[in-house]
Amino acid sequence: MFRRLTPETDRFRGYEVLLFRQGRAPSAVRRLMRRTVVFAPHRGKVGVFLPETSGAFSRDDLERAWCEQGAPAVQLPTADERVLLGRLIRLKVTPYVGYDDAWLDGVCLNLTCRRAPTKDIDSRVGRFLQTELLRAAEAALERFRPRLTKLPSQIVIKPLRQRILGQCTRDGEIRLNPTLLQWPETVLEETLAHELSHLVCFNHSPAFWETLTVLLPDWLPRSLCHYLT
Ligand SMILES: [Zn+2]
Image (tube, rainbow, N blue to C red; front, side, top):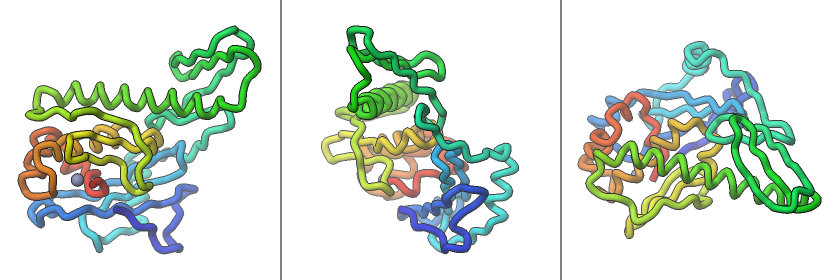
């Protein structure tokens, strides 16, 4: 869950400020949560994650994070750039090669076209990036696997309501919002850990937070979970 800040604090050094609020964590857990600031330089947004619904927040928090994180200036993608897990990658299209293909080569996304570049390039790139997101999620799942007691029936990339990054269904399917491509990979990892914990405990009871702590022991300092469902 998140809400926008009041207009006078809506922007910070070119960033659009999004304020995230936590869900219903027990008060003992809330006390341990810290506020966290995550910059998405290639999206021009900054997420401020607060431990309390009405928690104190000031520009000083942003200024402090700005200094600690090395003053990450806004760098929006140009027409031939895309964002993959918070990283800028360059799109390189080669027409007239006789086949359609797509692959990543360092920070370059290569796309070949059978003949002339067609209008569906954006959808091909979108599909490719979502496949990369799924691959990153599956790699993260492998890292969590030794601590898991239940595995998801499957992980899918699926557009969800804008404020929701991840979702777990009753039959154990984990859905990840493609908007995760815009945020640093740590947000994907956090989202996945949260949803994997719902496989064990479907609500946000104390048992859920205990499960999450086993899975990702440092989640409290990072404290990004509270905008997930
Ligand atoms: Zn949840």
